[in-house]
Length: 457
Image 1 (cartoon, rainbow, N blue to C red):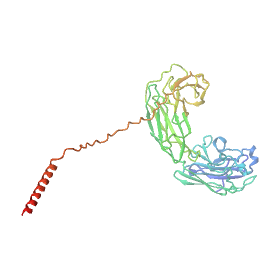
Image 2 (image 1 turned 180 degrees about the vertical axis):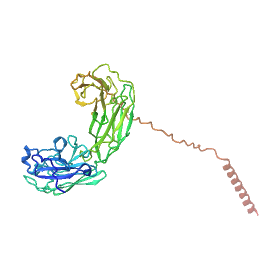
Image 3 (image 1 turned 60 degrees about the vertical axis):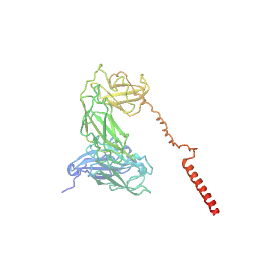
């Protein structure tokens, strides 16, 4: 039973305040993390600066994790106020306060907040660390250190607690800045959820006459309040050779996210690998979910592409095509042995001076995310880095759909007025009238006769 010193070395310029957190899987891997805050903020400009290290207990193994590229910068303008690892997801969080906040000045929001590893700690140590900066709606003057002054922060406890279960992790801390002294929390809902692609696992794409795929759509389910997605298509299942890399792209339909692998990107008889992940949410916070399970897309066998030259050849759009869509245009070309990067240029003129795109890509494809003009000629060229440029390929976009005028107004339906035939009144005196008159006349005569007889008597 004895105390064991587990740090092989104390990083230069970082003696002083330190906070410790255990790895989420400490029981098995024996790793713990130390955040060194330094004893004085301003003089650290010439030193290594505050940093985070990982140590394996009970030995003497020490690894510095901090550098600018990994998101745990080992520079003089950041002080770590808290660190923690989630036992649910394995994600590692580091709470930061910039030194100029301590000196009483505000900073840009992206200089503070909590750094969070994207895929737990399985990519540690550097350079595999990938992190998100959690800072949306955080005041630029927020401070997470106990004790504020123009010099050094006071010795402080770990000001970060991680709780939660399932796919929802909560970060709890205290904003110690003047007039803001209150607990604050961040709910992380992207720690373990994966997008599920449709189809999933394996799929087969149809092949066009030119030996490449026809346009192939991939869908996936919505995760929480997701807004933008990263997606990749690669030649290998480890995604070491990515040919399409979309970064934080918002789908056209947020309730039915879909990406279309454009025609001509994938070669007949070959298998390609696709994956997707959330990159941002509706609050504008950039935060990544784990990658989806890989979808393997095999293109059906088809006629081989005829290559008439040893240089780069156009695969899609085929040279001279005249029915190319104006959006979602994918460019693909044949590979050159030994080339890993290619310069891609897209222009609106044959001399390649009115460029729309000029970029260097890895692999043999490029996805244009802009919008072209209908019934217009475009030109593109590919140059292997260190090699000769291809010929200038051309294509024409399809014509705009024919305009449809307003629907003709139907002629009114005329309903004829009903015709009622009323017989004309007769001008002749009916017979029965004459009969009545005749009877009346007889009665008058009889009456007169009776009167005269009565008088004689």
